Length: 110
Length: 120
Image (tube, rainbow over all chains, first blue to last red; front, side, top):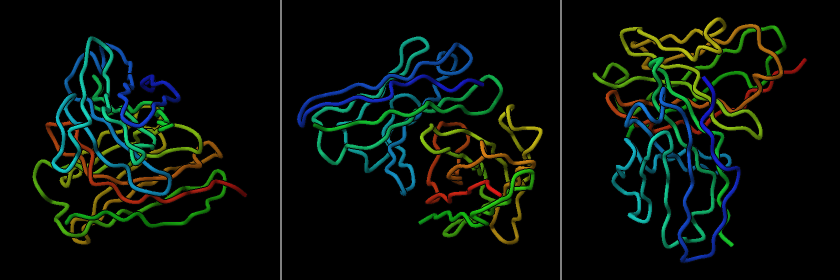
């Protein structure tokens, strides 16, 4: 199972919006509405930000949103804040009944 | 509040077996519809799914690691474990345990992670 493809890095200024893409295949992202996004800082446990493509867990800011088109899922963060600076990873269910993660994207808030 | 904590040796020799345990507190590992998983992150790389287990013992493994991985559960101790055999330097990573909610893409909560280095 190949890792999902994410950009290595994205950046934006405070207040701006950014989008992180997560590209897979019809055997994972494109085939199921089981895509999630995680925020993680070095040395800390990853935090669930979006699940099942576009659902936000309680306690997660509504500045975070998710979507999917074909084999590509996206995480959008609006109104960027300094505290959003972190690594973000996507995950998808696969046709093998397992899970695959993306390579991770480092978000820099300028 | 459910919490997960990884434990085990931080250094393993090449060709030996890596063994980690995840202790679950604040909830039962035998809860219906929850699976228990291991995910790792090699230095400078992305997260990699290793496998998951249900309290009944049913498992799913990453096909690329299947021949070397065993995940087991001990409901009496509220723990689940990972064994990875014949390790090489490529298995050096931060290893996380996490709960997966069945019927969704939710992995969480996660443990803090533990760094395992493979070196002689």
